[in-house]
Image 1 (cartoon, rainbow, N blue to C red):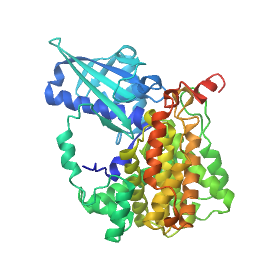
Image 2 (image 1 turned 45 degrees about the vertical axis):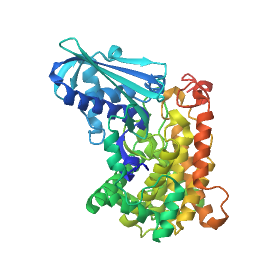
Image 3 (image 1 turned 135 degrees about the vertical axis):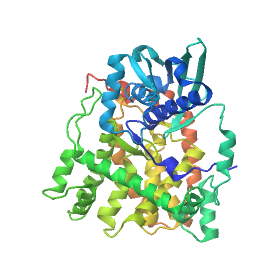
Length: 475
């Protein structure tokens, strides 16, 4: 039976720098706490230990996996925690050698000992982590989770399989692949966004869909705004200087504004020659991923490492292509992007630890290309063609972050993914989709085969590529 994935599964609000290495482990810690509360008395816990495996261990320090686990065990929610509180919570744990478990009980916690980095991989997935709770009666409770990309967390035994079966039956238009999606649009004479909207309405009220889509967009807009108005050096030891600030200053000039929406309106008044457009799109993408690298709040789209592509392309449409566009177009864009991302997740992967960077930047570029194409008047077939073109030219892209940080080459890659998305949309709009040689489903299959063939050292382990060619001293 087809798996039903909501737009809100693909576009999640969280904290950087990584969806699979930060948001996923954070959510896993939350689920572990829920299990403890369901099965035991949390007040009987005397100690908690966390074992990180595979890619979570190899690049966990650079991705703040250890910090995310501590925040999750503390009962903090990545979607709503005030960003300015994060440092204080972490410093308190480290200095007091104790953690407020689930925001309920203080227990000893020595983060250098109680978070163990194991380089070996668990067989089920490259991103594994195991939580162990010790009780007063000297018994233990052990639970293992896998962070499979995009903030999604699963257990190998699939404890919630029955619940998932119920969810699978909800959509009026269940979609497993691009061909099924296209067939629905033809049969129902609907656009892709209309099909997606009908599916979403089967899960939640229309008012909630509207509110949550706009909350996602406003988070993206605020993230771009913050990134364009923040200067300095990114944390982590690479001494990467933020570039969005200077680029933005050169582009915006002496404009006056006091909030993100006024800022958007001011950008609409700026010069729009080709070079300026390239710079604006790059600036938007850089801004998001610099915020992400600084443990700021972003929207996984479909991951944190690729969070800048979709906001940059949607912002491009709003400030360059269509100055009259508003909430209708924003919601349309996000729904199409989310659906394309879900098809990639079902048919391949959105985890760099499983598929390299093609699974992150490649997928985000495809999502943005398809969404832009629909806004520009493309048919459903052209929308899927745009997504295919974008991914086709990201096939084989490796994930080799220097120092395990989501900075080099990750931040710049978002600018490339955004520009490719715009180019792919334009190519699809100028092409009769009947003449397309490569269906989207075929490129998804190829991406997954490429992922399986890719050497593991190019899958977010920092054991190959730029990660070893360039060391911290070089930077």
